Length: 445
Image (cartoon, rainbow, N blue to C red; front, side, top):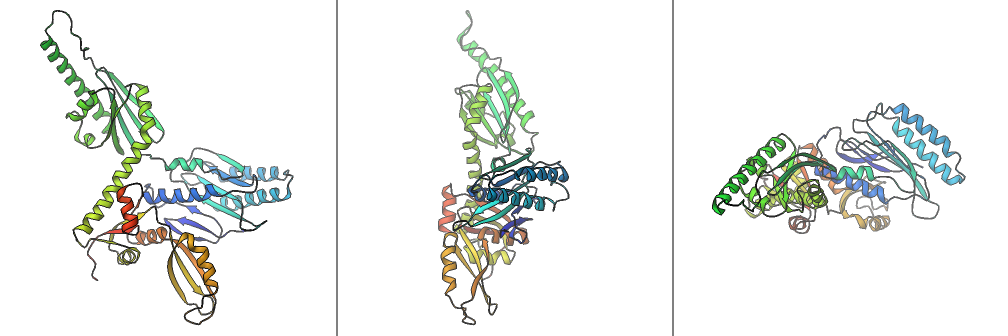
């Protein structure tokens, strides 16, 4: 019961005759939007798969584990599975464990980020029909869990976590009395430092003129803001991958600080949000954490908007350094002319290679994914234009994103996946077909 399945290797999407998906990042240490898109799509497909019972095996192996140790554990699990009363369930579980063992033996050692293997009998169309499917994923970053589970579904939640934003963000919370500095990386939050202002309250002591008291208070506040800026510079400028800075706190103090020139210009340019919070201590940091997912999502949207706006500028000013549409972009990629490839995450089209088994005639078509079953049905009665035989069959299907990503890899072209959550993202998908390019040089037509 072997499945026909897909794999990623060195960034290329294709077929694997040994049955299994492999996502490998050995050649691409940087987490790109394309890598995240691929992982998201793979995990979405895996999470939808269900077994007839507790027959789907999920194995997560952290880096540093010995292959021999894991194989020994799997032998024990195979023996334990022999006690399952249902003949069908017992056979399916043991077949899945065997397939996992076979895939694991292909590795001399566990990859640097660990290894995840899924295997199990997946019901197909028709009663009593099922297929043993196996998928191998080399994570985008190290996993820290050693897990073996046999359940009705594959356990993808630990890999789902890797889709969360992992860049470091700085947090400054301040009011007239205190300031806190923290860093946020993924789910890891660290309060780095807390200081007090030394600024007196708004009520002056007896015998002191209101004007003099206000001048002294303003001087103290200015000195406090300079100290906050100095601490922020010392803490955040040394973080090489700092993605953005969030400023928060109760009242207007945070706005007075943000408008002044207290931060290094590199930090000031990274301010992504100024938020109202009830506190400036750990509770205030927790408030920022609760709102962080939406803030960080907007950061990615800003990056995407800039990319699409750059493309729109080239189109609008007729510079000759932009093109769009499937055929035109494919041609530009084949010529090595593309500097930046923009692909919509909303693309749902597949590249089909049709072959005549009688004469070897081939043709390629692009169709929507949901029309694949009807396309296959129609092909049965269609004649080959070369030999007139009714022997046309689908030789290969390839997601359009993967076809273009493969072309881009061969010409050292950057690839950016653009969501449909912004106006620019919707425009890319609806007005330009979801496929666009910024060029290195003008094309001759």
